[in-house]
Length: 209
Ligand code: CO
Image 1 (cartoon, protein in one colour):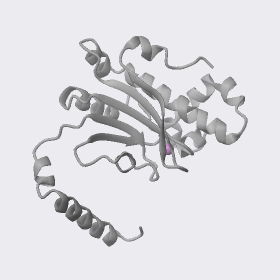
Image 2 (image 1 turned 90 degrees about the vertical axis):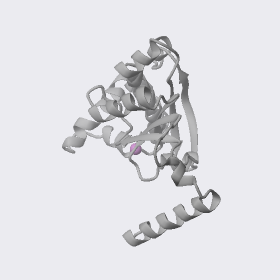
Image 3 (image 1 turned 60 degrees about the horizontal axis):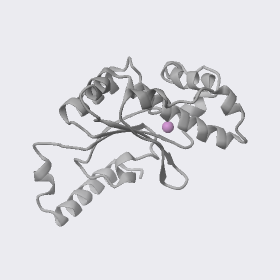
Image 4 (image 1 turned 45 degrees about the vertical axis):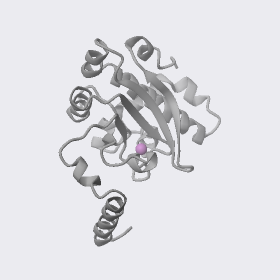
């Protein structure tokens, strides 16, 4: 996939294929969206959230950033969450981490990457909090895998403390929060935590480490 023209050609072929199956496919979606899911994932090119879940246009509201972070000070992710919960009324919010994440690898290294150091400061805090457990991992691969799970749990916890989610839970069980890790080497998703529907379960998410 090296040429810009190829991207446009692929787009036309994709749209034609969907229209061949359902002539009204795009017209039906033109004026409204009603996705059931908000997915928050990493920007990594190997982790295509809609492709790997078979989601079609209209199925999934999406936010991506480096390391799938949910910061309480990030207007971008907070706005996405508010719109998804209050306007689109999504039923599920999924934080999706992945294996071999560059952000997590970088957080294991000393600082020295400029603005990226600020962005991954939260991951460094997670490493500090769970150093005992991480140092006990048998290999670098195992350690990075566990860190990807801990990072996802941390972000689901952060999600559960956003004003939008707390407001929604004060009147019901929606949205349900989920944490997944995607394995780049197999293409498979694994659940880390599922269907968090209130403050009590959310506060019990992370083991002390
Ligand atoms: Co990543």
